[in-house]
Image 1 (tube, rainbow, N blue to C red):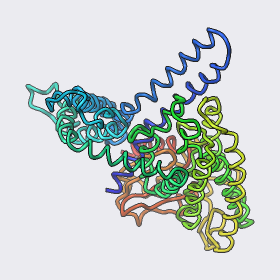
Image 2 (image 1 turned 180 degrees about the vertical axis):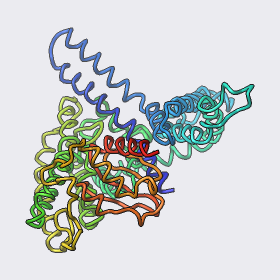
Image 3 (image 1 turned 60 degrees about the vertical axis):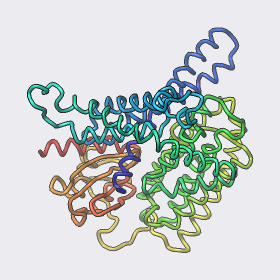
Length: 492
Protein backbone atom coordinates (compact mmCIF):
# COMPACT_ATOMS: atom_id res chain seq x y z
CA UNK A 1 0.00 0.00 0.00
CA UNK A 2 2.81 2.40 0.92
CA UNK A 3 4.55 1.71 -2.40
CA UNK A 4 1.32 2.49 -4.28
CA UNK A 5 0.89 5.77 -2.42
CA UNK A 6 4.51 6.69 -3.11
CA UNK A 7 4.00 6.01 -6.82
CA UNK A 8 0.92 8.21 -6.70
CA UNK A 9 2.94 10.99 -5.09
CA UNK A 10 5.53 10.69 -7.84
CA UNK A 11 2.84 10.72 -10.53
CA UNK A 12 1.38 13.95 -9.18
CA UNK A 13 4.61 15.72 -10.10
CA UNK A 14 3.92 15.33 -13.83
CA UNK A 15 0.94 17.72 -13.90
CA UNK A 16 2.55 19.93 -11.24
CA UNK A 17 5.52 20.39 -13.59
CA UNK A 18 3.18 22.25 -15.97
CA UNK A 19 2.45 24.97 -13.41
CA UNK A 20 5.64 27.01 -13.97
CA UNK A 21 4.39 27.72 -17.50
CA UNK A 22 1.26 29.25 -16.01
CA UNK A 23 3.30 31.25 -13.49
CA UNK A 24 5.54 32.70 -16.19
CA UNK A 25 2.61 33.75 -18.38
CA UNK A 26 0.60 35.27 -15.52
CA UNK A 27 3.65 36.83 -13.86
CA UNK A 28 4.79 38.59 -17.04
CA UNK A 29 1.24 39.73 -17.79
CA UNK A 30 1.02 41.49 -14.42
CA UNK A 31 4.21 43.42 -15.11
CA UNK A 32 2.96 44.44 -18.57
CA UNK A 33 -0.38 45.58 -17.10
CA UNK A 34 1.49 48.39 -15.36
CA UNK A 35 2.49 49.86 -18.73
CA UNK A 36 0.10 52.43 -20.15
CA UNK A 37 -1.33 51.86 -23.61
CA UNK A 38 -3.82 49.70 -25.48
CA UNK A 39 -1.17 47.42 -26.97
CA UNK A 40 0.32 46.63 -23.55
CA UNK A 41 -3.14 45.90 -22.18
CA UNK A 42 -3.90 43.55 -25.07
CA UNK A 43 -0.63 41.67 -24.63
CA UNK A 44 -1.19 41.41 -20.87
CA UNK A 45 -4.69 40.00 -21.38
CA UNK A 46 -3.37 37.54 -23.95
CA UNK A 47 -0.64 36.22 -21.64
CA UNK A 48 -2.89 36.17 -18.60
CA UNK A 49 -5.53 34.15 -20.45
CA UNK A 50 -2.88 31.63 -21.47
CA UNK A 51 -1.75 31.19 -17.87
CA UNK A 52 -5.27 30.88 -16.49
CA UNK A 53 -6.08 28.29 -19.16
CA UNK A 54 -3.70 26.00 -17.24
CA UNK A 55 -4.72 27.03 -13.73
CA UNK A 56 -8.44 26.73 -14.47
CA UNK A 57 -8.11 23.17 -15.80
CA UNK A 58 -5.90 21.54 -13.20
CA UNK A 59 -8.39 18.68 -12.74
CA UNK A 60 -7.94 17.60 -16.36
CA UNK A 61 -4.16 17.89 -16.10
CA UNK A 62 -4.12 15.67 -13.02
CA UNK A 63 -6.44 13.12 -14.65
CA UNK A 64 -4.11 12.76 -17.63
CA UNK A 65 -0.85 13.08 -15.68
CA UNK A 66 -1.74 10.56 -12.97
CA UNK A 67 -3.04 8.09 -15.55
CA UNK A 68 0.26 8.21 -17.42
CA UNK A 69 2.42 8.21 -14.30
CA UNK A 70 0.63 5.27 -12.64
CA UNK A 71 0.47 3.07 -15.74
CA UNK A 72 3.20 0.46 -16.09
CA UNK A 73 4.48 1.65 -19.46
CA UNK A 74 3.55 5.33 -19.01
CA UNK A 75 1.83 5.16 -22.38
CA UNK A 76 -0.21 7.87 -24.10
CA UNK A 77 -3.21 5.54 -24.23
CA UNK A 78 -3.36 5.73 -20.45
CA UNK A 79 -3.45 9.54 -20.64
CA UNK A 80 -6.32 9.43 -23.13
CA UNK A 81 -8.15 7.04 -20.83
CA UNK A 82 -7.62 9.42 -17.93
CA UNK A 83 -9.27 12.17 -19.95
CA UNK A 84 -12.18 9.85 -20.83
CA UNK A 85 -12.67 8.93 -17.17
CA UNK A 86 -12.61 12.62 -16.19
CA UNK A 87 -15.21 13.55 -18.82
CA UNK A 88 -17.52 10.74 -17.77
CA UNK A 89 -17.37 11.59 -14.06
CA UNK A 90 -17.65 15.37 -14.39
CA UNK A 91 -20.54 15.12 -16.86
CA UNK A 92 -22.55 12.49 -15.00
CA UNK A 93 -21.98 14.25 -11.67
CA UNK A 94 -22.49 17.81 -12.87
CA UNK A 95 -25.28 19.75 -11.21
CA UNK A 96 -27.62 19.18 -14.14
CA UNK A 97 -26.62 15.50 -14.34
CA UNK A 98 -27.27 14.89 -10.64
CA UNK A 99 -30.56 16.80 -10.82
CA UNK A 100 -31.69 14.51 -13.63
CA UNK A 101 -30.60 11.37 -11.80
CA UNK A 102 -32.32 12.36 -8.58
CA UNK A 103 -35.37 13.89 -10.26
CA UNK A 104 -35.00 17.20 -8.45
CA UNK A 105 -34.48 20.85 -9.34
CA UNK A 106 -30.90 21.98 -9.89
CA UNK A 107 -31.23 24.41 -7.00
CA UNK A 108 -31.84 21.45 -4.67
CA UNK A 109 -28.67 19.56 -5.67
CA UNK A 110 -26.05 19.13 -2.93
CA UNK A 111 -23.52 22.00 -3.19
CA UNK A 112 -20.71 19.43 -3.28
CA UNK A 113 -21.53 18.72 -6.93
CA UNK A 114 -20.99 22.35 -7.85
CA UNK A 115 -17.31 21.64 -7.25
CA UNK A 116 -17.01 18.30 -9.02
CA UNK A 117 -14.39 19.52 -11.51
CA UNK A 118 -11.53 19.51 -9.03
CA UNK A 119 -8.09 17.99 -8.57
CA UNK A 120 -9.40 15.20 -6.32
CA UNK A 121 -11.70 13.90 -9.07
CA UNK A 122 -8.87 14.36 -11.55
CA UNK A 123 -6.56 12.18 -9.44
CA UNK A 124 -9.29 9.57 -9.01
CA UNK A 125 -9.94 9.53 -12.77
CA UNK A 126 -6.23 9.04 -13.41
CA UNK A 127 -6.04 6.17 -10.93
CA UNK A 128 -9.01 4.39 -12.50
CA UNK A 129 -7.55 4.82 -15.99
CA UNK A 130 -4.13 3.52 -14.90
CA UNK A 131 -5.73 0.43 -13.36
CA UNK A 132 -7.61 -0.22 -16.59
CA UNK A 133 -4.42 0.25 -18.62
CA UNK A 134 -2.39 -2.11 -16.47
CA UNK A 135 -5.16 -4.72 -16.64
CA UNK A 136 -6.38 -4.53 -20.23
CA UNK A 137 -3.65 -2.98 -22.43
CA UNK A 138 -2.41 -6.43 -23.53
CA UNK A 139 -5.75 -8.26 -23.71
CA UNK A 140 -6.60 -9.92 -27.04
CA UNK A 141 -10.26 -10.08 -28.00
CA UNK A 142 -11.84 -12.57 -30.45
CA UNK A 143 -11.20 -11.84 -34.15
CA UNK A 144 -14.61 -10.20 -34.60
CA UNK A 145 -13.66 -7.62 -31.99
CA UNK A 146 -9.92 -7.57 -32.65
CA UNK A 147 -9.96 -3.88 -33.57
CA UNK A 148 -10.75 -3.08 -29.93
CA UNK A 149 -7.98 -5.25 -28.48
CA UNK A 150 -5.05 -4.06 -26.42
CA UNK A 151 -4.63 -0.32 -25.89
CA UNK A 152 -7.84 0.52 -27.77
CA UNK A 153 -9.74 -1.39 -25.11
CA UNK A 154 -8.41 0.74 -22.28
CA UNK A 155 -10.46 3.94 -22.89
CA UNK A 156 -13.60 1.82 -23.26
CA UNK A 157 -13.01 0.02 -19.98
CA UNK A 158 -12.09 3.31 -18.32
CA UNK A 159 -15.41 4.84 -19.38
CA UNK A 160 -17.33 1.80 -18.14
CA UNK A 161 -15.43 1.72 -14.85
CA UNK A 162 -15.91 5.41 -14.29
CA UNK A 163 -19.65 5.03 -14.74
CA UNK A 164 -19.63 2.58 -11.82
CA UNK A 165 -17.38 4.89 -9.80
CA UNK A 166 -19.72 7.81 -10.58
CA UNK A 167 -22.64 5.91 -9.06
CA UNK A 168 -20.59 5.44 -5.88
CA UNK A 169 -19.51 9.08 -5.92
CA UNK A 170 -23.14 10.14 -6.12
CA UNK A 171 -23.38 9.06 -2.48
CA UNK A 172 -19.78 9.27 -1.32
CA UNK A 173 -18.62 12.57 -2.82
CA UNK A 174 -20.79 14.83 -0.60
CA UNK A 175 -19.35 13.08 2.48
CA UNK A 176 -15.74 13.29 1.22
CA UNK A 177 -16.16 16.88 0.10
CA UNK A 178 -17.67 17.99 3.41
CA UNK A 179 -14.85 16.21 5.32
CA UNK A 180 -12.19 17.97 3.24
CA UNK A 181 -13.92 21.31 3.66
CA UNK A 182 -14.22 20.77 7.42
CA UNK A 183 -10.52 19.94 7.65
CA UNK A 184 -9.61 23.00 5.60
CA UNK A 185 -11.92 25.23 7.63
CA UNK A 186 -10.42 23.90 10.88
CA UNK A 187 -6.94 24.88 9.72
CA UNK A 188 -8.19 28.23 8.38
CA UNK A 189 -9.94 28.98 11.70
CA UNK A 190 -6.59 28.59 13.45
CA UNK A 191 -5.21 31.31 11.16
CA UNK A 192 -1.43 31.66 11.64
CA UNK A 193 -1.23 28.63 13.94
CA UNK A 194 -3.07 26.57 11.33
CA UNK A 195 -0.63 27.63 8.64
CA UNK A 196 2.18 26.56 10.96
CA UNK A 197 0.62 23.15 11.57
CA UNK A 198 0.26 22.68 7.83
CA UNK A 199 3.90 23.63 7.20
CA UNK A 200 5.12 21.22 9.89
CA UNK A 201 3.09 18.30 8.50
CA UNK A 202 4.11 19.17 4.96
CA UNK A 203 7.79 18.51 5.73
CA UNK A 204 7.17 15.48 7.95
CA UNK A 205 5.29 13.68 5.18
CA UNK A 206 7.99 14.16 2.53
CA UNK A 207 9.79 10.85 3.27
CA UNK A 208 6.57 8.98 2.46
CA UNK A 209 5.61 11.12 -0.54
CA UNK A 210 2.19 11.71 1.04
CA UNK A 211 2.74 15.46 1.39
CA UNK A 212 1.23 15.82 -2.08
CA UNK A 213 -2.14 14.66 -0.75
CA UNK A 214 -1.97 17.23 2.05
CA UNK A 215 -0.90 19.96 -0.36
CA UNK A 216 -3.87 19.34 -2.64
CA UNK A 217 -6.25 20.44 0.11
CA UNK A 218 -4.59 23.83 0.49
CA UNK A 219 -3.01 24.53 -2.88
CA UNK A 220 -5.81 23.39 -5.19
CA UNK A 221 -9.57 23.65 -5.38
CA UNK A 222 -10.38 20.50 -3.41
CA UNK A 223 -11.82 22.17 -0.33
CA UNK A 224 -12.33 25.67 -1.68
CA UNK A 225 -8.96 27.13 -0.60
CA UNK A 226 -7.19 26.92 -3.98
CA UNK A 227 -4.22 29.03 -2.84
CA UNK A 228 -2.10 28.67 -6.00
CA UNK A 229 -4.75 29.50 -8.60
CA UNK A 230 -6.30 32.23 -6.44
CA UNK A 231 -2.95 33.92 -5.90
CA UNK A 232 -1.95 33.95 -9.55
CA UNK A 233 -5.41 35.11 -10.56
CA UNK A 234 -5.07 37.82 -7.88
CA UNK A 235 -8.42 36.84 -6.41
CA UNK A 236 -9.27 36.59 -2.73
CA UNK A 237 -8.13 38.63 0.26
CA UNK A 238 -4.86 40.55 0.28
CA UNK A 239 -2.63 39.28 3.06
CA UNK A 240 -4.54 35.98 3.27
CA UNK A 241 -4.47 34.48 -0.20
CA UNK A 242 -1.06 32.84 -0.50
CA UNK A 243 -0.87 32.12 3.23
CA UNK A 244 -0.10 28.46 2.59
CA UNK A 245 2.66 29.35 0.12
CA UNK A 246 4.55 32.39 1.41
CA UNK A 247 6.25 30.84 4.44
CA UNK A 248 8.12 28.34 2.28
CA UNK A 249 10.24 31.06 0.60
CA UNK A 250 12.33 31.89 3.71
CA UNK A 251 13.01 28.17 4.19
CA UNK A 252 13.91 27.15 0.66
CA UNK A 253 15.77 30.30 -0.35
CA UNK A 254 17.58 30.96 2.93
CA UNK A 255 17.06 28.37 5.68
CA UNK A 256 18.10 25.21 3.88
CA UNK A 257 21.11 26.79 2.13
CA UNK A 258 22.25 28.00 5.58
CA UNK A 259 21.81 24.44 6.88
CA UNK A 260 24.01 23.25 4.03
CA UNK A 261 26.67 25.77 5.06
CA UNK A 262 26.52 24.49 8.64
CA UNK A 263 26.99 20.92 7.44
CA UNK A 264 29.94 21.99 5.31
CA UNK A 265 31.61 23.84 8.19
CA UNK A 266 31.21 20.82 10.47
CA UNK A 267 32.52 18.31 7.91
CA UNK A 268 35.89 16.68 8.53
CA UNK A 269 38.77 18.60 6.99
CA UNK A 270 39.72 15.85 4.56
CA UNK A 271 36.11 15.50 3.43
CA UNK A 272 35.21 19.17 3.05
CA UNK A 273 35.70 19.28 -0.71
CA UNK A 274 33.63 16.12 -1.15
CA UNK A 275 30.86 17.54 1.07
CA UNK A 276 31.00 20.88 -0.74
CA UNK A 277 30.34 19.30 -4.13
CA UNK A 278 27.13 17.79 -2.81
CA UNK A 279 25.94 20.55 -0.50
CA UNK A 280 26.64 23.52 -2.79
CA UNK A 281 24.74 21.98 -5.70
CA UNK A 282 21.81 21.01 -3.47
CA UNK A 283 21.74 24.43 -1.77
CA UNK A 284 21.70 26.23 -5.12
CA UNK A 285 18.83 24.03 -6.35
CA UNK A 286 16.89 24.87 -3.18
CA UNK A 287 17.54 28.61 -3.49
CA UNK A 288 16.97 28.98 -7.22
CA UNK A 289 14.23 26.46 -8.02
CA UNK A 290 12.85 25.48 -4.61
CA UNK A 291 13.67 21.79 -5.17
CA UNK A 292 14.80 20.71 -1.72
CA UNK A 293 14.78 16.92 -1.76
CA UNK A 294 18.46 16.50 -2.67
CA UNK A 295 19.43 18.58 0.35
CA UNK A 296 16.81 17.20 2.73
CA UNK A 297 17.67 13.59 1.95
CA UNK A 298 21.31 14.29 2.72
CA UNK A 299 20.42 14.49 6.43
CA UNK A 300 16.86 13.13 6.67
CA UNK A 301 17.85 9.58 7.60
CA UNK A 302 21.40 9.97 8.90
CA UNK A 303 20.32 12.70 11.32
CA UNK A 304 16.51 12.51 11.81
CA UNK A 305 16.65 14.96 14.73
CA UNK A 306 17.77 17.63 12.26
CA UNK A 307 14.86 16.81 10.01
CA UNK A 308 12.37 17.21 12.85
CA UNK A 309 13.96 20.58 13.64
CA UNK A 310 13.70 21.47 9.95
CA UNK A 311 10.00 20.55 9.91
CA UNK A 312 9.38 22.61 13.06
CA UNK A 313 11.18 25.63 11.58
CA UNK A 314 9.15 25.30 8.39
CA UNK A 315 5.96 25.37 10.42
CA UNK A 316 7.25 28.39 12.33
CA UNK A 317 8.06 30.18 9.09
CA UNK A 318 4.56 29.68 7.68
CA UNK A 319 3.06 30.81 10.99
CA UNK A 320 5.19 33.98 11.11
CA UNK A 321 4.44 34.93 7.50
CA UNK A 322 0.73 34.32 8.07
CA UNK A 323 0.75 36.29 11.33
CA UNK A 324 2.19 39.40 9.65
CA UNK A 325 0.18 38.76 6.46
CA UNK A 326 3.28 38.72 4.25
CA UNK A 327 2.32 36.87 1.10
CA UNK A 328 3.92 35.74 -2.12
CA UNK A 329 3.11 32.74 -4.26
CA UNK A 330 4.61 29.97 -6.30
CA UNK A 331 3.34 27.64 -8.97
CA UNK A 332 5.99 24.94 -8.66
CA UNK A 333 8.10 25.59 -5.57
CA UNK A 334 9.32 28.43 -3.39
CA UNK A 335 12.58 29.32 -5.12
CA UNK A 336 13.96 32.54 -6.56
CA UNK A 337 12.28 31.99 -9.95
CA UNK A 338 8.74 31.84 -8.56
CA UNK A 339 9.44 34.54 -5.99
CA UNK A 340 10.54 37.00 -8.68
CA UNK A 341 7.50 36.28 -10.82
CA UNK A 342 5.12 36.63 -7.88
CA UNK A 343 6.30 40.16 -7.09
CA UNK A 344 4.20 41.51 -9.93
CA UNK A 345 0.97 39.91 -8.73
CA UNK A 346 -1.29 42.64 -7.23
CA UNK A 347 -2.53 40.48 -4.37
CA UNK A 348 1.00 39.85 -3.06
CA UNK A 349 1.34 41.64 0.28
CA UNK A 350 4.70 43.02 1.43
CA UNK A 351 6.57 40.15 -0.27
CA UNK A 352 9.92 41.86 0.33
CA UNK A 353 9.51 41.19 4.05
CA UNK A 354 9.93 37.50 3.28
CA UNK A 355 13.54 38.29 2.38
CA UNK A 356 14.07 39.79 5.84
CA UNK A 357 12.34 36.81 7.41
CA UNK A 358 14.54 34.53 5.32
CA UNK A 359 17.72 36.15 6.62
CA UNK A 360 16.55 35.60 10.20
CA UNK A 361 15.75 31.96 9.46
CA UNK A 362 19.14 31.52 7.79
CA UNK A 363 20.77 32.46 11.10
CA UNK A 364 18.45 30.10 13.01
CA UNK A 365 19.16 27.21 10.66
CA UNK A 366 22.90 27.74 10.63
CA UNK A 367 23.44 27.92 14.38
CA UNK A 368 20.86 25.26 15.31
CA UNK A 369 22.21 22.80 12.75
CA UNK A 370 25.83 23.52 13.66
CA UNK A 371 25.17 23.17 17.38
CA UNK A 372 23.21 19.90 17.04
CA UNK A 373 25.66 18.34 14.58
CA UNK A 374 28.62 18.95 16.88
CA UNK A 375 26.80 18.31 20.17
CA UNK A 376 25.20 15.03 19.04
CA UNK A 377 28.07 14.03 16.71
CA UNK A 378 25.69 13.52 13.79
CA UNK A 379 26.89 11.84 10.58
CA UNK A 380 25.90 14.56 8.16
CA UNK A 381 27.71 14.77 4.78
CA UNK A 382 31.47 14.93 5.33
CA UNK A 383 31.30 13.44 8.83
CA UNK A 384 31.00 9.76 7.87
CA UNK A 385 32.97 7.04 9.61
CA UNK A 386 36.60 6.55 8.64
CA UNK A 387 36.27 2.77 8.49
CA UNK A 388 38.07 1.28 5.48
CA UNK A 389 36.05 1.53 2.30
CA UNK A 390 33.23 3.54 3.82
CA UNK A 391 32.55 6.87 2.22
CA UNK A 392 35.32 6.43 -0.35
CA UNK A 393 34.76 7.78 -3.81
CA UNK A 394 34.83 5.47 -6.81
CA UNK A 395 37.80 6.20 -9.04
CA UNK A 396 35.58 6.61 -12.07
CA UNK A 397 33.83 9.57 -10.46
CA UNK A 398 35.88 12.49 -9.17
CA UNK A 399 33.51 14.24 -6.74
CA UNK A 400 36.05 16.85 -5.72
CA UNK A 401 36.43 18.11 -9.26
CA UNK A 402 32.79 17.47 -10.14
CA UNK A 403 33.79 15.55 -13.29
CA UNK A 404 34.05 11.97 -14.42
CA UNK A 405 37.44 10.51 -15.13
CA UNK A 406 35.96 8.40 -17.87
CA UNK A 407 35.53 9.79 -21.35
CA UNK A 408 31.94 8.60 -21.30
CA UNK A 409 29.09 11.00 -20.74
CA UNK A 410 28.96 11.99 -17.07
CA UNK A 411 25.34 10.96 -16.61
CA UNK A 412 25.85 7.65 -18.44
CA UNK A 413 28.78 6.65 -16.24
CA UNK A 414 26.94 7.68 -13.09
CA UNK A 415 23.89 5.67 -14.18
CA UNK A 416 26.00 2.61 -14.92
CA UNK A 417 27.71 2.75 -11.52
CA UNK A 418 24.36 3.14 -9.75
CA UNK A 419 22.86 0.27 -11.72
CA UNK A 420 25.77 -2.01 -10.87
CA UNK A 421 25.43 -1.00 -7.22
CA UNK A 422 21.77 -2.03 -7.35
CA UNK A 423 22.70 -5.50 -8.54
CA UNK A 424 22.15 -5.03 -12.27
CA UNK A 425 19.70 -6.94 -14.45
CA UNK A 426 19.55 -9.88 -12.08
CA UNK A 427 18.27 -7.79 -9.20
CA UNK A 428 16.47 -4.68 -10.54
CA UNK A 429 12.77 -5.15 -11.28
CA UNK A 430 11.54 -1.65 -12.10
CA UNK A 431 13.03 1.82 -12.58
CA UNK A 432 11.11 5.02 -11.99
CA UNK A 433 11.80 8.53 -10.78
CA UNK A 434 10.23 11.61 -9.23
CA UNK A 435 11.62 15.16 -9.13
CA UNK A 436 14.92 14.28 -7.49
CA UNK A 437 14.89 10.57 -6.66
CA UNK A 438 15.24 7.29 -8.50
CA UNK A 439 12.52 4.93 -7.30
CA UNK A 440 13.53 1.31 -7.79
CA UNK A 441 12.17 -2.11 -7.03
CA UNK A 442 14.69 -4.91 -6.46
CA UNK A 443 14.45 -8.66 -5.83
CA UNK A 444 17.03 -8.87 -3.04
CA UNK A 445 17.93 -5.85 -0.92
CA UNK A 446 21.06 -7.65 0.32
CA UNK A 447 22.50 -7.38 -3.20
CA UNK A 448 22.25 -3.58 -3.15
CA UNK A 449 25.69 -2.09 -2.52
CA UNK A 450 24.91 1.27 -0.92
CA UNK A 451 28.57 2.27 -0.63
CA UNK A 452 29.09 1.75 -4.35
CA UNK A 453 26.02 3.86 -5.13
CA UNK A 454 27.05 6.63 -2.75
CA UNK A 455 30.53 6.63 -4.28
CA UNK A 456 29.03 8.21 -7.41
CA UNK A 457 28.39 11.35 -5.38
CA UNK A 458 24.62 11.02 -4.91
CA UNK A 459 23.25 12.70 -1.76
CA UNK A 460 21.83 9.51 -0.31
CA UNK A 461 20.22 6.08 -0.57
CA UNK A 462 16.91 5.39 1.15
CA UNK A 463 15.57 1.85 1.71
CA UNK A 464 11.78 2.17 2.02
CA UNK A 465 10.74 -1.47 2.11
CA UNK A 466 11.77 -5.06 1.61
CA UNK A 467 12.04 -4.57 -2.15
CA UNK A 468 12.00 -0.79 -2.61
CA UNK A 469 14.93 1.59 -2.58
CA UNK A 470 15.31 5.24 -3.54
CA UNK A 471 18.48 6.92 -4.76
CA UNK A 472 18.55 10.69 -4.25
CA UNK A 473 20.19 12.13 -7.39
CA UNK A 474 18.99 15.72 -7.59
CA UNK A 475 17.47 17.78 -10.37
CA UNK A 476 19.21 15.72 -13.09
CA UNK A 477 17.42 12.54 -11.99
CA UNK A 478 15.37 12.24 -15.20
CA UNK A 479 18.52 11.91 -17.30
CA UNK A 480 20.04 9.33 -14.96
CA UNK A 481 16.79 7.32 -15.04
CA UNK A 482 16.75 7.45 -18.85
CA UNK A 483 20.34 6.18 -18.98
CA UNK A 484 19.50 3.28 -16.66
CA UNK A 485 16.57 2.35 -18.89
CA UNK A 486 18.94 2.37 -21.88
CA UNK A 487 21.26 0.01 -20.02
CA UNK A 488 18.38 -2.33 -19.27
CA UNK A 489 17.28 -2.38 -22.91
CA UNK A 490 20.85 -2.88 -24.05
CA UNK A 491 21.26 -5.92 -21.82
CA UNK A 492 17.97 -7.54 -22.79
